[in-house]
Image (cartoon, rainbow, N blue to C red; front, side, top):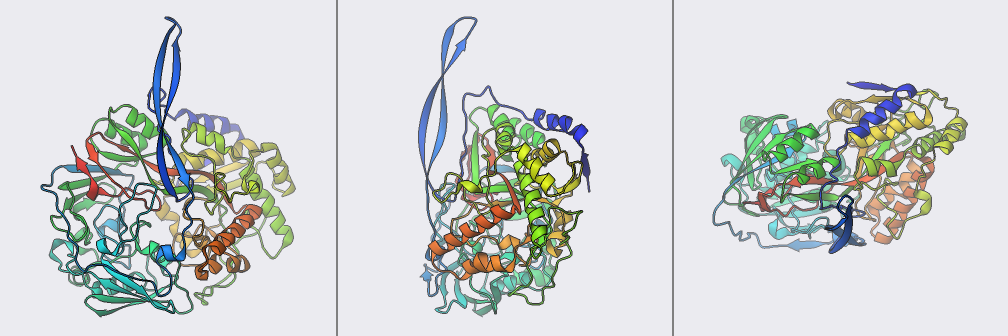
Length: 637
């Protein structure tokens, strides 16, 4: 674990170092503006702006044409039916689809990832086997292609599950499994037995699969009826999620999916050190945090790639990613705003591609575990070990003690008011990371926005609140900033917490432990310090709050909301079929979070990718957090 102590005396230097490290691409004549407010339908208009530069020495006017893409956003409200979650909903496509293969496959795509984790080297659902965005393991549901940030329609004609029916009572879903889906490396045809075994294994008690905590809230046992039919039974005491279809698809994050039971039985869960999937690319070899080699298949139920191979390389350092891109060593690389503009500014014909539905970056006030019982798992023990509402943890409150709540609300509000979000956007985000204020995804551009949700930058007012809370200047506050996640720019959170030191005279201790190192504290609910994490924007009516409940899984944000609030918001939305009512419940949750300041929202972002001019075609799809995807649509020059 790396710890960085920041005191008042050193903060000016620390901030100077953070800001001076940023590279500006001011000389480029093309400005890329990426705007992502909500998961919506987007129409793109071209706006050409004339700017005039005056060459003073020669007094000659030089007219520079700057092209900006301006996103014109249309608010879309989803419904339970749109998610495919309504009781009795049914769809079916042809059991086989005709896939037109390219006349030839040529070229090798090289893609950068900040890291290559251990999940790539196992086929064990119990451990960490999930679908992926590179095309090795497909989820069982796929959506039609659609321009980012739109989501395509869930389409059984291009899915492993070529049909599904929700029971009239909503207690089960029956899936039809497509014929002819082949596992890689000769492990035969995928069957309903593979699907049932894989999901049951991932949901087994004690699993370490990062996705099981989400769908495990409502998914019970999976039952294979025959080779082409599998039934998912809703867990006893739970309700089928309104977003079950989303959470089983490619446009969500990685999700549970099917691997070859026979391969596991014969080779063991590591399956020879490579992931056994059924997607358009098969994994050939690799090494954790180094590289993976993929080979395109020549026949596939959904899509046959136009390229013949792909290589993923792990490059954690941003400056090294820029150099690799500029030198032509890689085709596509994820980068934060300042680096992506620097890189593409040096390569003629390159471009910036935003991915994801948009995500928001937050500091969560870890240790506020206020839930007292879990209706899904009554055996869950409360109170949590991380709940320490004492003088050493002034950001943690006791909801049963009004004085404790008042002190905690004031101190948490002070921390939020001490952060200049506009400056972070301007200096670090290059104008591409606008200020953000809500956990639930509502933005100031939304018709449902409330002005009281915005947190003003007011250092003087913040100091006054901190004094009222009884927290002295010089108080030591630890905070965990994950350093190794491509979707969590370290410099954004670092700049925010350094302002706690500068504006509140706090001694800030930055814990830069890798995510995997502190993840057990999230799973065990033992974490008791503020922590850095993100949240997707999502639809207005999606059930919000799951990550702040006692639901099992490592994605918890170090917070559990009190039962009475969950009953009115998240739990209510899990069973509410009226989209408008779900929106009202999410507004109620947003109001309550604004009062308690449990989540310090900072900015929102899309994941940005530098794309080489060698990439002639690429149609990625919208998924939750903007992970690289759509390699099967790439055509290289």
